[in-house]
Amino acid sequence: MLNKVILIGRLVRDIDLRYTQANKAVANFTLACDRQMTREKREEAEANSYPTADFPKVVVWGKQAENASRYLKKGSLCAIEGRIETGSYDDRETGKKVYTTTVIADRVEFLNSSNSSQNYAGAKNNEKTYKYMANENKTHTEQNNDDFFGDDFEEFDNGVIPF
Image (cartoon, rainbow, N blue to C red):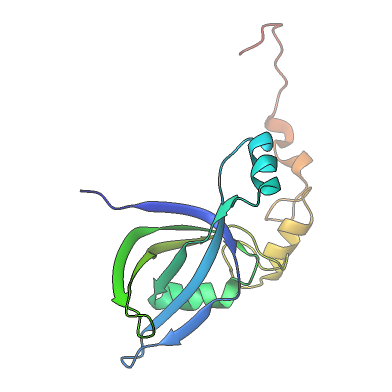
């Protein structure tokens, strides 16, 4: 049997980071994942007040939990790879059984950042990285792209389109 889920969505609110008694980090958050539908179906659903997104609860453990809490904020886009875990409990007030579904994330990918200087999955703000991203006509070695081939490049045109 295989239990694997991959989700892409935006955080509904900032991550709730806590620590167990054994000092292990655990992060809880909710993703807003749009349902795939045509523009017409989406407009129809919105007009009828039907949901156009799902909001799975996600749990992340350990160092990934700390990193997610540090670099992801409300509205951040991320991808989650993990497994679905179901459970249940008896509601104290009503006495009814409540069923739960949670995604236990094995991997969290940061797909964007609200701050342009924080990129590459929350990497440290490094001046060279920032210069590389902010100035697209330069390479990571701060050389002009026009000099990439130097004198070794020779144009070749035999009149045949290669594709």
